[in-house]
Length: 186
Image (cartoon, rainbow, N blue to C red; front, side):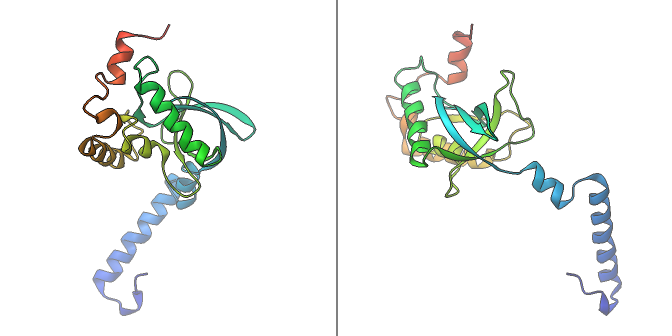
């Protein structure tokens, strides 16, 4: 807190500037309460692991098909990597007793109406990041949902350097995005 009792002109100016910022922030709706509400994390239960980057959850007594933000896992047709990625995601959520915490970003749904999410375990591990870090997915940033992009870049760098999973010498030969372009959804 600034000490206004010294009446230093520089202190008074900085205090006034800070106070002005708080007033503007409150007026524009970017107060602490609003920001915290937009990032609020919900508890959910995973009821299905569809593939390495898509799950179905039960949250607030409703089912939601969810796409993990920031990652792209091999497609099921990219054998054996699609199945390995799905099984790894299944193991992570099973180890957490199928309980996850769901965080959204700026854009809430994709063109398939899936909820776009960051998934967290009870002990604070981000599942999206772990999938990249252990070589079961690649970095896949779509703006404006890039809140954790730097973390994901670092995780991918580690996985590549350690040649884990899809980065091994006999690893994934084609990015999931390129595979989908050749094999579009029906």
